[in-house]
Length: 298
Image (cartoon, rainbow, N blue to C red; front, side, top):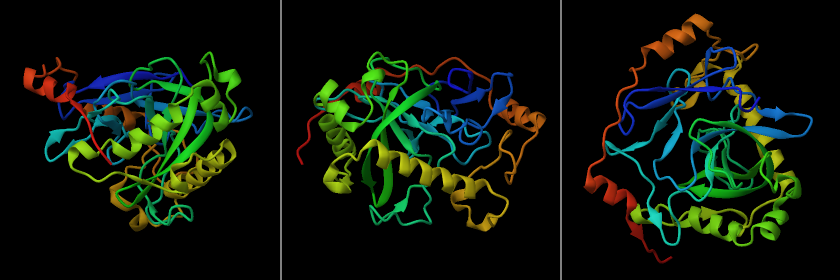
């Protein structure tokens, strides 16, 4: 299923109304959260990943779980568009960052591994291949392992995966292969996740398992668990009062789900978004702030 989607830009790039929607192979608008299948190839146990943030970039883009069709938007904090700081020795995000659709970290569930509730989002993925993927791309990935981040008191799993078309994908089958073929990347991943919020005045993030990554089998169990939570989220059997945070669960293709949308309704939602406008040019001061390099001590 990867590679069969088209990105539709709406709003003003570098502005708060900027959104990226997706259309399927038939040219119909879909929900990024709900309509992209979990598996790219179920027999091969490869998964679809939506790229939210390309490697080396700083804009904190994310699937909007609360808006119709769940487009990708830039996070806003205190009325300002959010950019992740460059923390020595890193530049922006050090991998392609995104999410696996049809998964959900349930905030009503206390995870037995972290003793914390879920963060109310699809499960996150760091893709460690050599290619920089564009924002909004849907790629097939091979899962290698997972880190158990605890982010401000919430469980925030980070799946470690590689693009199935990467030149090293055939040699990578589990978490131990990452250190063997990309020495230092696991350590850098832990460091980045631990310190990236410190320049914003936040404490260092914590981890379960002393920060050590778990293997592929464990990661697959976490994906299966969060996929089950997603199924319950979109199920008609779930009382709507139990859906936290006003999540938008409308979808076009999920059989038996609680809030099926017609193609006409989905197109209406897409048409309601602001038309694409010329990008807002960042000021020199804004660009300087984005490019600034921070050194932190734990």
